[in-house]
Length: 240
Image (cartoon, rainbow, N blue to C red; front, side, top):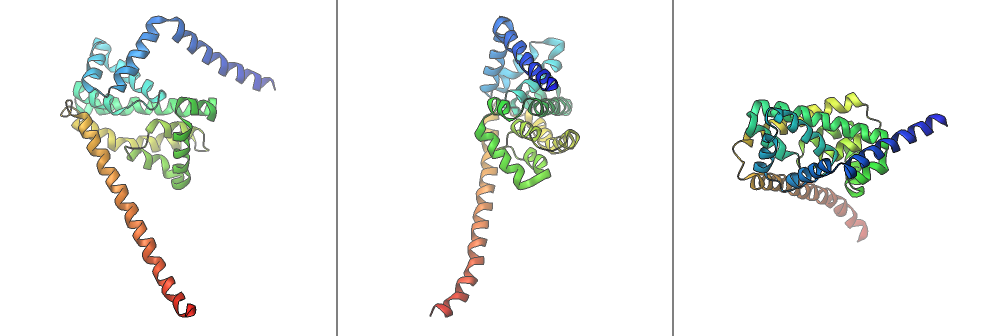
């Protein structure tokens, strides 16, 4: 009972401190609002300018920005990856984006572990979490790798959801790193070439994946319908 009370007080205390810092430290509140606005605009040039404003601390600012984005899902992460590639080169940008995204994923995982489902639903949304739950039910332990390979599945919601399952941290961590690597490399490689057309690129990418899903669904529907036809033919003589 005492241990439960200590944990409850610790959880409440952390939230109280964070809330006090946000509401009573005006520069911090202004900085948070500015970051949320910049990321919400999906403007790589604006993200680049913001990161560069920190001078020699730009890599640290980018790293912190990625972790913040992870916690505040569903803010987009790809704009930071594009900005990193444009600022630091695709190779170093990829390392920075991948490592900071891994740190953000770990933070999301432990927040979910520590605070539970109700808190995660407030940070993300109940609907998004339920969709990811079904994803985990379908793919099991491979869900994390599969989810990281799909651009239309939120990395951060998956990280939160994983923290609510029985998946161990290191199993989650290596699956996240492996699954997240291909997208990070691709986004970083083309990042410095798409500063003016990021939205077009992302829209085209999502369209291709959407068409793929529609094609797969249509193929499954055709197969299911084709498999049911022999059964109907077999039943017809008895019906006569």
